[in-house]
Image (cartoon, rainbow, N blue to C red; front, side, top):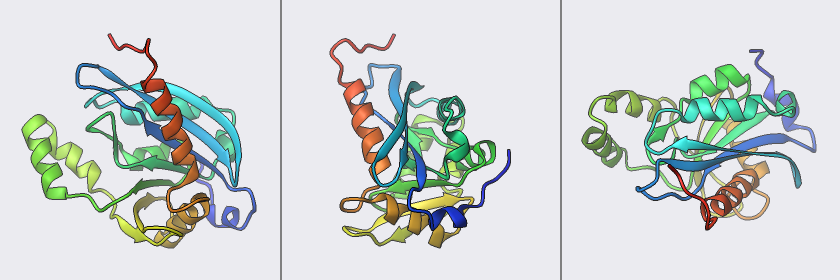
Length: 201
């Protein structure tokens, strides 16, 4: 996959980003909703795609690749934003693989610095067979503090510099501190997850 050069796109008025987030679920369910959106900043929504991901499974990276590679907008997307490093519980993302196979930078964003000791303990307790692999994916790229128009947040990126990642996050945070494409993906995923008829079998 050809890797794009992000720097020229950062100077354009309409930066096209993709964002992925999951929706609410209960431990009685097998799957959580997964939503990808494509936004041309500041406010043009170009695509919304919906799938599902296995709760606490290992298919998150594959499901995101399938969602985005099916979109006709993919060649114009300059960065992928994801909320955290896992979806559907502890279904951990492989940021390096997403970057490599999509050919675009990837930024994982979180509202607060994680408690890595607690995460590691939980992985050992619930996933003893592959706790080491999941934890290695979680710690693969360092989180860095990003100042915004509101409270600071944390971001880990692959395929771009720390300064470029901070620039993308700030440009995407149209109101307050949270990137607008992620907010939109979360709203859609939340609506899907709360549908009265939604069941997982």
